[in-house]
Length: 79
Image (tube, rainbow, N blue to C red; front, top):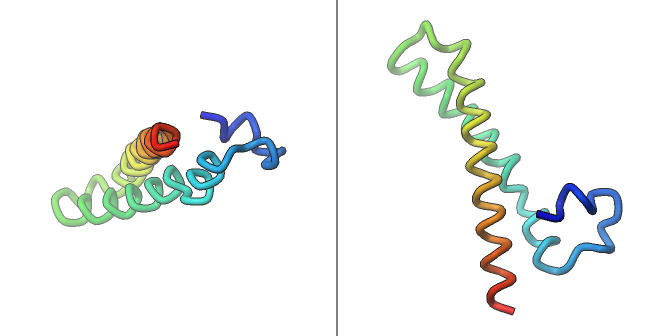
């Protein structure tokens, strides 16, 4: 994915890359994952409150990267 390569030069991104970068899928996934990690740890195992947000953040960020790559492929395929 070109986000890392062209982070300093957004003019070199195509329209699909700009749309995917603007949506901030990995960052949103990180926040949602952290929230789920806290919430689920509080509901099921309060002793895991220290680990739940960390695991949730990593899983959410990974899911966000996957969604971003999938969306980028989808946008490029429609052109």
